Figure 1 (cartoon, one colour):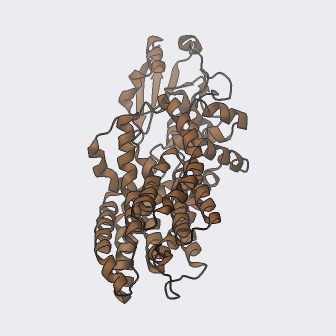
Figure 2: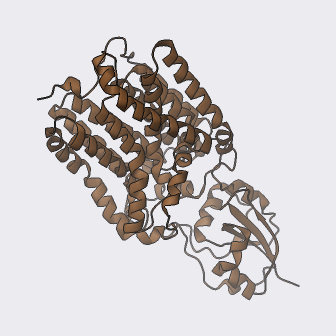
Figure 3: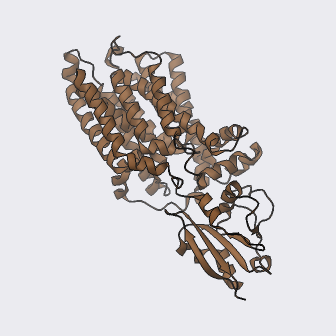
Length: 495
């Protein structure tokens, strides 16, 4: 039987960090992510989080049976979190905390796989990614998913090192967390199976691993069935071809330049570490075990491939943000590459240089995500564009847009003449509305219309068609800076 020393690199006093180092690194990464939360306004997805979180638990269950069922665990958490406040900073704080957790465990995982230097470099690279600043200041569950995936790889490495029963339980719990944070986060688990079942010398590990995966995967099975029944809710997702994979480095990093740079370092470094692993071990140098190199490459590369396969075999689901769970793998592989291929002071210089270059390359995108319109829906801008006069009315092209104005608007807004009641529909994020548009607008001379999308999209909305049928014509229209953005239009009735 192969000893545990062949499964994980030995940790010497020189490579073991202080107890506080991963958590200081995690706090720093969380602070970077949280630094832009007060600048960018909430977008539609985040407003949907508020809509879900402010319902009763029974209302949440009703919503989950029709839409966003795979977000139910996150919505339940935010339901209790939002009891304190629904302010932007408070709602986004959990995502920044999740980034801190992910970075802290990246340090520990890097230390276990190679050295403290590798772990700290990985955490630093992770912190400077524009995608981390975006999702770390985003009131959705994507940062939670990234953190849960890092914890699951850490738990697996710890269990492989010493496969006690309690550690398998911890690994199973970490898998359950992955499944609860986001349905497509489970696409990283095949990489763990690949390492444990095919490449690790102790094949019996697979037999021990499967029960933990099976129990931990129960939430994914349940949420997957719910999601399949609600696939009509994502009918807006277009079918993607293989060419979408060319954009994957940009998606993972949040910007093209740092994405391409880190992908090149990560992939080339993995190949060189693979080739050097046997000679390094024979020479007594710390190296990265080949099975874990394969596991990390699988963590990075399998999710986009599998998501594209699901899109073609089941229903279109390829959305960039579903793959944020690969960002920690990109940072970790790049960190392992520079820490493993250089020695002594050269390694320190190489690690610092890579972090500085990657950080500098992403500065434009870092500034962009911290702008007011950093989430591509500047709702306060739309509110300010509406110059209300007595008797003005407002109509929404999509009923769900109304909730954005409920959050950012005030009593000076025009009369919402189509609205019926104050509560959203129990099976979605829209609101009950009157159908008799012409009658609702009787006696009105000016109507403000707001929709999500470009100016040209207006004529396609039923409410705009009804306005025109009632004799209104468009007088002016404004669109926010980025697509899809928001359009504000003023319609008047000729005297």
